Image 1 (tube, rainbow, N blue to C red):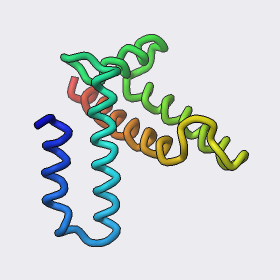
Image 2 (tube, rainbow, N blue to C red; image 1 turned 90 degrees about the vertical axis):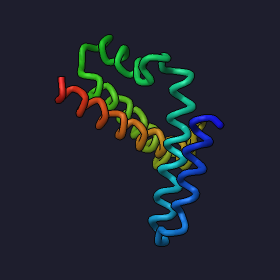
Image 3 (cartoon, rainbow, N blue to C red; image 1 turned 45 degrees about the vertical axis):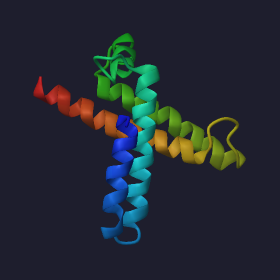
Length: 117
């Protein structure tokens, strides 16, 4: 069983104890977890799942977590366009909100990592 399948099984087992609202919240977190694990296979390296974020931040000479904030800003521009036009041409609102949430978590991970160094 792969990492994603194991996590999905574990999380489904805990779901019945959650109240309405929390159940949906955790379900979205599980979607983001699965998305993150799949995307890091394409973007990360075997020894560092966040290598693409780190190297992109190095290019513009900012801390890695700040690079995530720039990516969140790009996603916010997409949402602003959606509010203005009423549609997204590529990634929809669901995808964009998931990306924002994932980048926020990645930023927190990298921020905490930087404080430990």
